[in-house]
Length: 239
Figure 1 (spheres, rainbow, N blue to C red):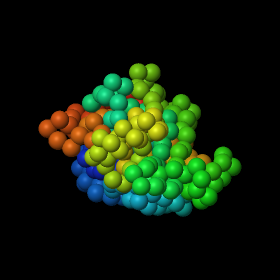
Figure 2: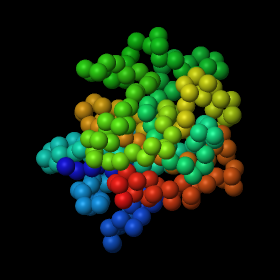
Figure 3: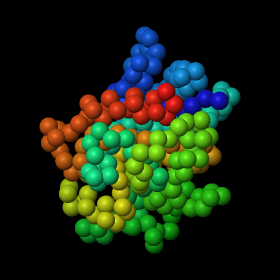
């Protein structure tokens, strides 16, 4: 079976593959390519940044895989993220999603976060129920389905997916208080929902590049976070 490895950008894919980057492989600005990772077949997918790009590209990739008769074991999303909790998720650390949340879906009043509790339209509905803002994940089951190893020391928590990076301390505090959010990203919810709709296991691991709300790049650890993606993939592959 083939592992689908997904990143938003080529920088994240290149960093994650590291020494496994196929020799002479051209940059994947967007789209997919075949590769071999630790003796297993892999489909590499770069989606572009944001939930809309993620939804479009992963949907197209999954449909193409089905049309080609390619059997996927699951989708592994790797990338960088911002941290809501520097104690649990410090700069440079790897974190694991056990839920994804799309906080802007629902009804938002003046100065309020969106709430989908009284909103009548689900984003998706299937045998496992209806999905509004929040989508629960089961990392252990997904990892087993993909024959991946999960280190015990990776913090787990809820990831927030937003099309706009949170640059406000007020919004960051509100998201953390309302949802108990651990990390913020821009693609995870869309990828998770696409996989759920097709019955495909999904696993999301990210490394922390910055604190949520911190826009001074001098305080970021982006290079360290990117470098940490290779170590994360090594751990997942049992290397």
